[in-house]
Length: 187
Image: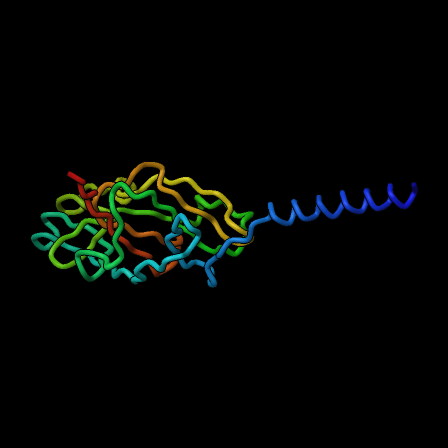
């Protein structure tokens, strides 16, 4: 009788361990810190276009007409494309999941103009009389959750409209770019 009870107890413990082991699902994470990937629904990671934006200052009429500060990326469109109706999620490996993700992740929409993607960071009025930071009007709202052991999952708070986008870490030089195309109608 004692052997049966002991066998039953061991069997229950083994079953519990098996169930717990199955619940702890491992996920694929980026190999390097600060590198962003698209997270497909099946869990695969797809590389985004990696670019280093250049800083540019445009001055109008020798400064009398004002000016603006820009970040520019060569090429009007990224070679990484998604559809507007596609659910998008991104993953980035971080040094620690204890850090506030909103303090390290930046997500912006870029304008396409004259062979470049550009983000207007600031504008200065005539003769430098007034200035304003404009970068926040291009910021994309997003939600963040811990992902795996060392990463964050970044999901746009709203569906992204057609255009060009870039994710980066604050204080880093590289941006991870992609574009969104209009959804195709199935008529």
